[in-house]
Image (cartoon, rainbow, N blue to C red):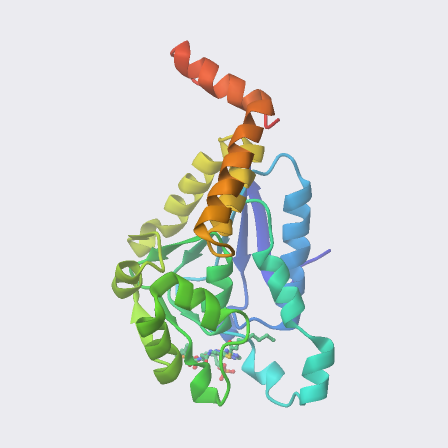
Length: 257
Ligand code: CO8
């Protein structure tokens, strides 16, 4: 498939997807989301890929869903087409995905970043859910994921006023893992992805699944889940290799099995 709205490359075990509609500030049209899912399907199926970086441009990670594409939709059209089903697929990926965000991450752009496993932000990043200014509300998980990330007070303020928060505020609030200088964002994201991709892939997938459980279940159920999968990892080659390497004072060589 030839992509028109994204750029895709691989660097060793890391895949890089760059949103590429610069004239529209990477507004997320349906075709872009379909291309993104197509690319992610390929990376999920490829055992040679251990981590994915999703990024945009210097000016915008993504300024939201494509307003021009949406504006004339009717309720039955929207309901039947259910474009969010495609968006949801991004958030259900098993391999780790890092969002590397510079510039605007607004509306669907903020929601897309939050579907990733964590956000690395450039010091230029700006986050917000401005949908209320358009007469709608966030529709791709924003009211839920933002609230879980930053708590009710700030999420409510952002969704009701539509104001943006800068990278420093987003980091204080817990929305982003780390802020880096804009010039270093991609290098830092790729370096971080390289570290993750160097771990045992099945173990990384289990770690991701276990952390996600914290958002979906009670503490006791989450701990029970963690314990079951923890014990299960002792059936892997890579657990024997990781612990063996530590005891033998050498670097582990994971085989992703
Ligand atoms: N959709 C379509 N086009 C956009 C979008 C967008 N979200 N954002 C920017 N653009 C376009 C502009 O129309 C403009 O195009 P043109 O040159 O043809 O007029 C171009 O990008 C550059 O934008 P600006 O001239 O506005 O650039 P500025 O630097 O002046 O401003 C802003 C940057 C502040 C980011 C401004 O562009 C803006 O406010 N954009 C809209 C932000 C927004 O409201 N986002 C939320 C959209 S709604 C949403 O995301 C709902 C999510 C639910 C998922 C839906 C699934 C189908």
